[in-house]
Image 1 (cartoon, rainbow, N blue to C red):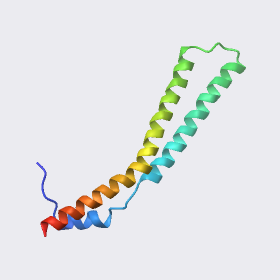
Image 2: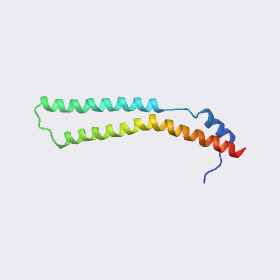
Image 3: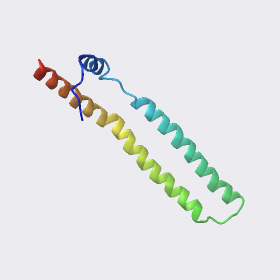
Image 4: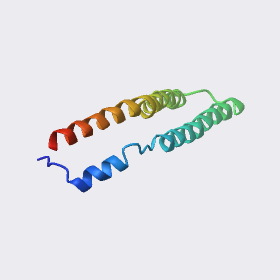
Length: 102
């Protein structure tokens, strides 16, 4: 069951209301996706150089990379646009709670 936050909890939340790990998340996404893209491109290049026919696993890994790009885009949007909206909503909620608790 939920409990009412203590004054120390509220003070901590107010002091850290604008903390944002978004830039670190975005940086990790960009680095990991770049490495994955390089690996997939090198895979296709090596198959072409070796004159090996592309198989289902090659196309599945490419499809996985495309799906990963979609997840990365969703996370980037969530960490930039939605963070600001949620931050505003939580700030308003805390002010509303504080004004009603006295």
